[in-house]
Amino acid sequence: MRFLMLVLADPTLTDADEAPVTIEQWVEESYGAGRATEGDRLRPGGEAKTIRRRKGEVIVSDGPFAEAYELIGGFDVLECETIEEAVELASRHPMASGGVIQLHPAWPLDL
Image (cartoon, rainbow, N blue to C red; front, side, top):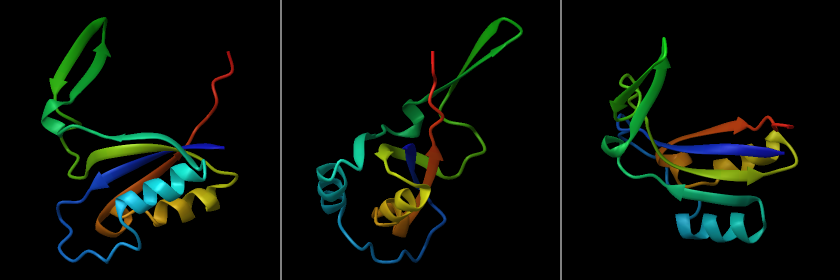
């Protein structure tokens, strides 16, 4: 089962727990075991664009969704047998201690 793991910074966090591993260790363990297959950091939110199509018009705004205070800083694609396995893997990511991790199960597009 595939999951999109979003890694978010939480600017309101003042007292982060110590991460169980470094990002280098997490990447080595997760990618080495084939449980994470792809991922990257994202450039600053100010370089992002938000695109909407309304009534035939394309509307492009600078930055991410305006009301979001937790900014997406990166992502990983996980391959896990269950949501529980994905949660366990995500909970070891260093940003689970100093930010926020979101897991989104993929819904395969069968064309």
